[in-house]
Image (cartoon, rainbow, N blue to C red; front, side):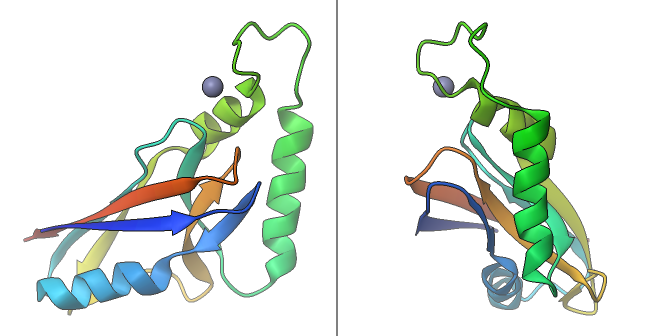
Length: 131
Ligand code: ZN
């Protein structure tokens, strides 16, 4: 089963999408299997990180911006190579096991849509596999 979601993003940020992924799982009725969350964009991504302290999300953005600053040597004419680098760093999907109808996430883990070049209209997919 494949579920499709859309969202409007801010210029940059981590958006907690754990709830919608859990809703997809509930609709699927799958009790044991695998869940894949996928982002079909090149300057956004999907990651799993802390769901409790919002300062962690701030620090992740700060750290990524320090690790991947904009550089005059970049050739890409669109001018958003730093966002492409950040997107490749976090990756475009996560995989979470399903057991007893629930996502096997750690208590402090949430699933995040990561925007690095917004604001934009974005999409992501949730694939639920049985077994
Ligand atoms: Zn680009």
